Length: 205
Image 1: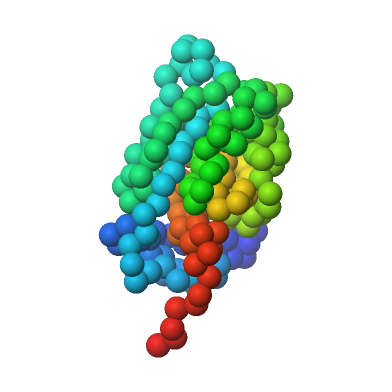
Image 2: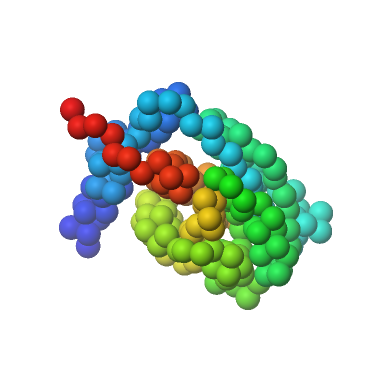
């Protein structure tokens, strides 16, 4: 167990911070992020939409805290948040909302509905909309989440692409949503660049 914890701590970046609008990973490195170009020559205009999936928030019986927290974190990272929206835990409505926003090179983030309760169907709705799944990103979020909670593996969050759009599920709690987003922001930015067709490798020093 001790060796497993040592390996987990080595693989997960401890310090991710912002340099202008670009995120840079500092030691200890995660192998998946270390070799990734993180400083493009020209600033990228990044756009995002945040969708809160919650019956109670949609009904007005609970205040949505996760959506605004995620939106604020994205703005601090240099994203333009085009819209925030609240939908109930209803698969057809979630799918319709995702389809409406997943046009162009944009990050569409959901928060909520990623657990194993009967009404947690955000992953199913997201899979139905995505053309390709990117399994490594939610796997990385769950691994990073183990540092905060032993329940992190119960998240069924998925990530995938539709055209040039990138779709990502986050947990429903404000702290969990922001922490999960922060852990994969460098990967999301690079994925958006690739989906936009920017596939040339930077010159080696």
